[in-house]
Length: 172
Image (cartoon, rainbow, N blue to C red; front, side):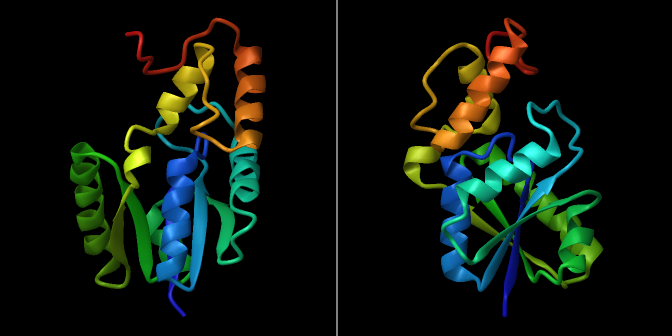
């Protein structure tokens, strides 16, 4: 059995993430979507909220499991006996970042875990969690970007934030 780890902050999960997870599930026996708990960036949702949103988003694919994790991704991959880390690529800058991370993981894992990058579907190339957060905080329509339950959670969270702009605002 080949277990693949698809790590991320998923703040929030969007259709681009779901596309990568579902496509990866056609390639590997099991996908573990691992929600990172403490990234070095500001988040809108708590780890528990993000895990819940991800679980709901992928509930119809029995090959996808969802969990939280902390620490180094490569250590978590070894802990769950994952042979592969799955990453999604949207634009050229994603490649540079993911390439460096894959090389660092190779150094630390000593050929125990491979990295596989899937190119995003064309309709999702613009999607990022920060873009989705920015649009919802500015009152825009995100219905084509996230599942309905995520849209509802985002709107509720945004209503509680008032006029506060998100970190790394597109308005800057």
